Length: 152
Length: 192
Image 1 (cartoon, rainbow over the protein chains, first blue to last red):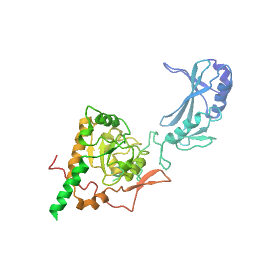
Image 2 (cartoon, each protein chain N blue to C red; image 1 turned 180 degrees about the vertical axis):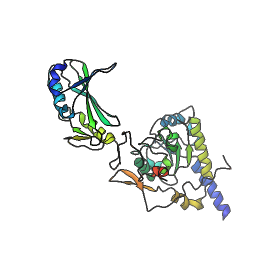
Image 3 (cartoon, one colour; image 1 turned 135 degrees about the vertical axis):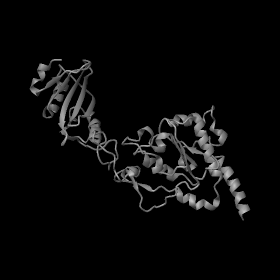
Image 4 (tube, rainbow over the protein chains, first blue to last red; image 1 turned 120 degrees about the vertical axis):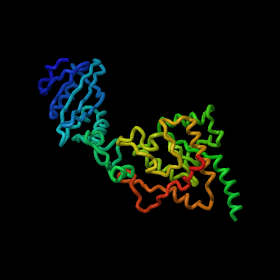
């Protein structure tokens, strides 16, 4: 893959064993980079395979897996987020299928996606407290009858 | 008077205990064992329970076969409330008895007895068809000991103390209900 074409976006290439090279980018350049990769004929990444969030204890990492159906190539774009105030620009304008992925990550990790058309909880009930897939999550909601034993 | 009531009880309980119609309520892998129990090899029809009803309004027994999550619990409570009295519940499998291997999970209800009253606990992962038949036989023994004089007490005991909060979609405690004696006919020690 020709990384030199991406130098405008201030990228950093991370080698991974037994896998594709990961492209680390700052969150301010994320939407520009993805729309460039999607629309440029040289890369032509037309599909978003998945959107992964990882809790690294001191920060969050988001990994966008993109795929080109014409060239049969695959890449991972990675963003690091501040743990105390995790927010990033939504990519729904670039890949429409990212909407449900972003709702899921908002639900389970509490990461805010700005400019998402309708960000809401996808799996957990509406009034749920906390984000269950964070490493420091503790299930101690006293409204639930099955947590009584733990509280006593 | 006692002679009349006990003979009515005998006929009434004989009829009920030999035609316990379960509801089709299989939420995960225990449901496969429940299907096998109703198939030819184990043949639940020998005990009069072969009629799996697809609606709670025609069912006597809720065999809760599988994990119940927070989002499924309100649906299960609604189905239970729609069943006509007299109604019974078998908690089938380790997940429904106490959470099983999902006890530490954020999404699983830690035992369905926190939501609805349970008559028979059947903890295995998953229970074999023979074990489910054993649970049904134990339930039959329990039904045969009931008397129509205690009818109101049984009905009172089958009320859930939880209700669904429409705003938050979470089952919360219903402060209007204070009944604590679930499973009044639980004295089985001499039979089992």
